Image 1 (cartoon, rainbow, N blue to C red):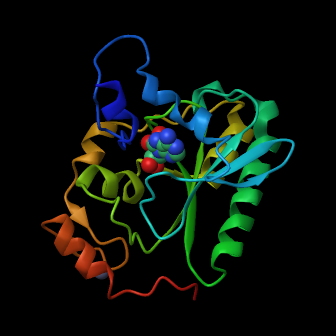
Image 2: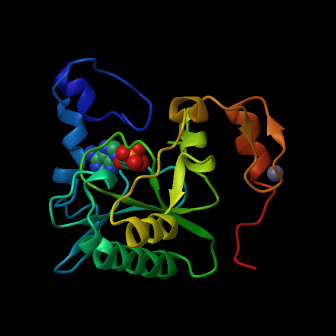
Length: 201
Ligand code: AMP
Ligand code: ZN
């Protein structure tokens, strides 16, 4: 069982354990952080890796070296760190493809331990994007922009934003993120989104 799980994408909403203690795969980012195959940037504060199951052509995760579990663990003094994560994420996106649109943000309810900022290109062109939960986790309010989180931490000294009915967001009907057309299936959506341009205007 354990060896089978090791290579799986247990990302958002894919509940595979009901045990109270955190399942081992939740800590996968901690080992991937130090994997030279995945690492793309490192400094004294952050490490950036390629997402192991990218949901777009370019998909990175920016992680602090400091042990911060999630958004709820953040304190006012972490504002500088979040700004640094944002800047380095933006630089990595620009180095990958300066023409392409990217979004930087956090999942309201992350599946993996250790704070991680998603840096994801808006083409969503990837075989790893397989289901409605994957799509909705990046294309509904489940995905919270990094700048919004930074602003909230500055104003309140903590991240209090509660995304109501987060599991409902993941079940929403599929909708193109560009023209908002509703689509019935993931294959139809993936064909449809190829017609749009994701270049910066
Ligand atoms: P989140 O829902 O914000 O916790 O997203 C976790 C992200 O980590 C997803 O985009 C997964 O594809 C990615 N992921 C899962 N396991 C690993 C791993 N072992 N190494 C790198 N990325 C991973
Ligand atoms: Zn469209």
